[in-house]
Image (cartoon, rainbow, N blue to C red; front, side, top):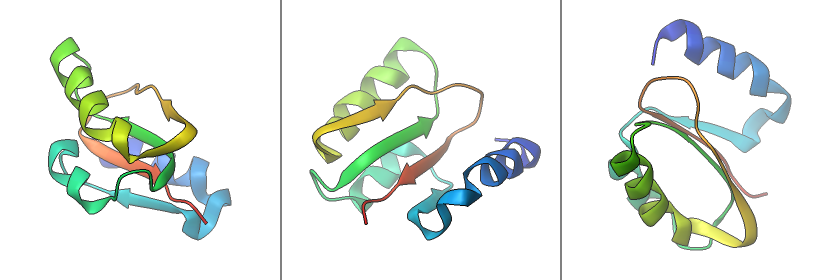
Length: 86
């Protein structure tokens, strides 16, 4: 992810303050940082091919609390942005 896009994303999400955490690592490595059913919202900007998206869905779906949602990726890069629960 270019520094420009990263900074634009930070600017757009700054209104959420400390609820947003940026983790700049591969999503397949970052998955172990989160307990199952611990997240309300997930946004992963990573690989955009079928295999990459399928892998992220398989890895991160258990991390969502029941009734919460997954935000589809767009753009480029391999960073993970997660809005953590209160």
